[in-house]
Image 1 (spheres, rainbow, N blue to C red):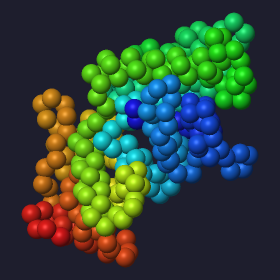
Image 2 (cartoon, helix red, strand yellow; image 1 turned 60 degrees about the horizontal axis):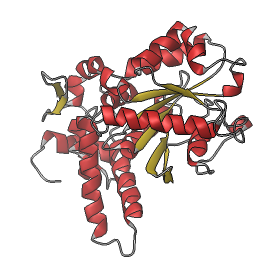
Image 3 (tube, rainbow, N blue to C red; image 1 turned 180 degrees about the horizontal axis):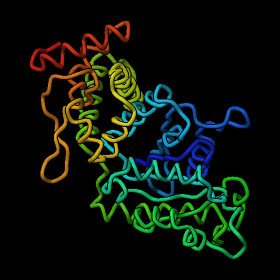
Image 4 (cartoon, helix red, strand yellow; image 1 turned 90 degrees about the horizontal axis):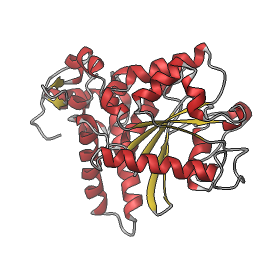
Length: 326
């Protein structure tokens, strides 16, 4: 099961991932070095399940520039391909402020209705819950939080990475109890989604590129493991996609989460059309470097370039001549 973990910087995403795994698999930053700096994925066995957690940087931070965000959005896409089985939206149990509202607004802006079908809200800092109160009780008194949880099918849980570690596992305020409850919720959600992962045309195209890279690597891989081959292939595809310098972060996020209005606004630049079913499909459209699916055609032309400018030039030429092998 692939689980993508989202939330603003400082929400406790990395600590949550470590709590789920029961070990320090993800680096935790403290004090002035707070926040995940880059996307990281790890796979472990948890209660008989093979789980891959994709810990993202603060993609929904409201104070980060596009220049800061884009590399990690692209890295997140390559790590998630062909798509996650679940999104975890991580928020802190705290007084609801304008900043929290801005984060929720951003989540609702980027998540499509389909993506919400794969999402669960997870609250950290559970020690802030008043005595005798459940997270459901807390959510109900805040309309923005209540609306968000309802969009996620009513799925929400709470943990406390610091204070609930050693509580008896049968108690509500126990990480062991809450992790098991979370996994049960995710199992049920995956079943309701017919066992499939959330995906779309772009994620599928990126997965095709990764598979191609894996085959190329295997031919000269020596003693590399399949996991090492996968990681190297993902990095190669990441390098190729990051050279598509004209793509704005909003376009990448919209294409990742399947937001129709953003796809429509960017259709001429993206080379994407919307089908009657609401899905997106790739079409051959010459255009600016701000092409995601169209730009993927230029990936193999751009990946060997020594400079961003050279990569851009090669990618554009490949897009203009899509049937010419680079």
